[in-house]
Length: 205
Image 1: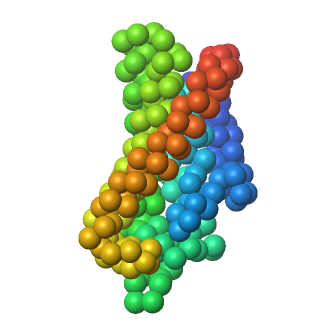
Image 2 (image 1 turned 180 degrees about the horizontal axis):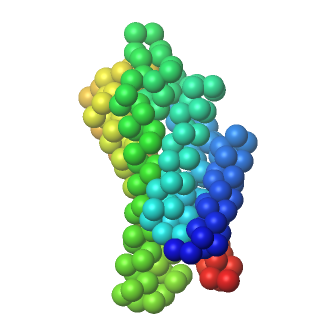
């Protein structure tokens, strides 16, 4: 890639990262819904994957993960230990699995969105459909992997922090995925379609 194109790509990534950080540190980025937080920070990550490719999407997902660690460290809720190793609740401490939950699903948002968009564009050449599916699957990747990681690595402690029986946790997590996750994914889909159409024209220039 020529130097001027590399510079342009870096600026584009930086601009989307700036939008992420702005969302993350305002009430619009992490919206409290009971003991969990719904998020809109994944939307610039999805757009980055669609517009700039899966590698750029992965970088932007990493920024999302870092903001998640910071937010849960600086303004914790009772379940923040699952996202940061720097917070504890009673005898329950965050650890390296917290970093995995905070980072890996968020990185994969952009990677999945980028590859899904590229694949569908090759198959159908329909930008709106490709952006919609990429937005939905990118968002659901985050929700499923985050909640799945919580269940695998922090199940009993998470259930205790939520004040529920561990035997009911799988149902609670399924409810979060099917309710919060689908709402977030639907929002990402609705926003990705028009923004991707406009921004793709700008990026091509």
